[in-house]
Image (cartoon, rainbow, N blue to C red; front, side, top):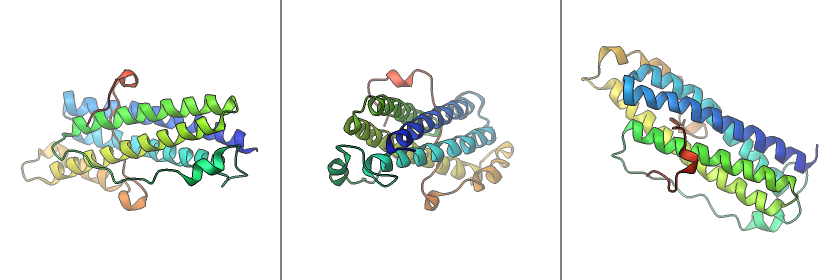
Length: 204
């Protein structure tokens, strides 16, 4: 498999997993905003986390194809890889609710999927540098989605162990405990709302 074929395959897979993560985040968000079924929301978040991590992995593999780590660099991408901007720490307002973090994560998942689709188009047209830039943009959104998902998970855990928590939510802790924490690479993501791809600006 050539580097170009590998990049195209990873873009397609990453976009699909981001889309699936968005769907499950939508379900989690609805449980918070309408049904208040926190245990079910945690289950939806767990499934979304799996898709988010796979999307991130495929995105990183696509980046490696352009940079040359997976079968040789594509034209014009070696120098671009050398000047790649360093990753910065992610922060967000601590006052965001679970639903607001769901919405923020959803927006980033949708945007990541869009950038992977554009990268695939550029790669297929042999515009490798443009494709590499779109890949970096997608990875940035993926990291932000995971960051907001982690924040929502922590809020959920705090609610679950709170003395005032409802008995119906106690069963959610087993689901939450089964989710890998940030030390395993990244935390999980939440909620996607339909139509976010056309939103002019991201949530907090």
